[in-house]
Length: 396
Image 1 (cartoon, rainbow, N blue to C red):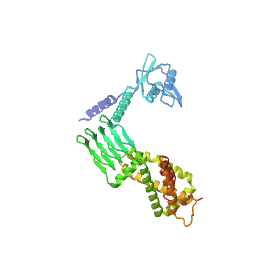
Image 2 (spheres, rainbow, N blue to C red):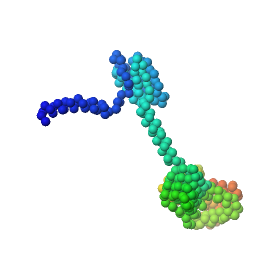
Image 3 (cartoon, rainbow, N blue to C red):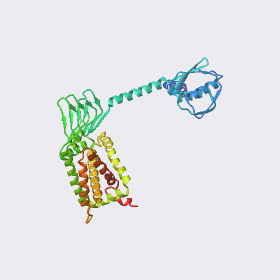
Image 4 (tube, rainbow, N blue to C red):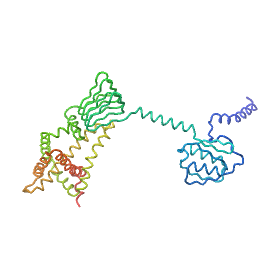
């Protein structure tokens, strides 16, 4: 190709490229129509205001009539703008962009409307979000009672702490029962795992379980499941506590366990008692935190598959704290009884005080509440002192 032809081709390309680029790029201008040539330069000094305030000020300076049909959510957007002696068209573009608006100008009238593209995009985003929510469903968590998912129901996750889970509908993720069993009825579908701690997993013919069947039975998981039902107030545990035989059995077990703890950890009991005596208010707050914080903790652990195995650990720690609290309260009460204190030992103090608390625990309703409150205060001291390891900091 000769040099002359090459120059001609380059010249033609230079002339066509701007047009091609303009055709490939969508129109970014928000104003339709042409502003008058004699439109003056405008100045906007608006440190605080809205998009509508800027449009009104701009129209007054330019001498235009203003018609706004955009929604209030767009025109009331906060806008800070400061320009000095700039062309009205450039300033108008800035204000329209700030409010996601478009405008047209004809016969001295500026008509402002919402940007249809932006509105459609926002509406489609909302529709997608609602659709995702509909697909995701809702989480169902029950405490102290069983959970039933009906045949027409679709839930994201089904969790029962202290009860069983029966599924006849659709569970998109996991079905979990702590202290109960998981039963999938004909027609049920569980896309995740079916987990039963202290119970069993039953999949009837016609039911679909796409994940794993995890059933933790045996002595320890079953005992943990029973403790879970009792802690969260399950109805079977509550009814059994109303019988005198059950209360008597509980009193004897608590008394024996308290004696064993006193024999095994005499030094720790002395240090916990020191912490309790020096900081009774803080110990009481710790006990209230244990009582009212345990159920929310179980809920937080239950809604994640990673935290589910930690629920039995949390239950056992709670039981251990209350057993230590009962022993500590029995020791404190035994030391203050008006009896001979010769050769007093932690075991003797626990034996005396534990007998009193055991008798109090036999009283229906009131006895159980009293034992929980008394043990909770000492349990708070046990937790805050780290089983007596921080007792020395409580000494003035």
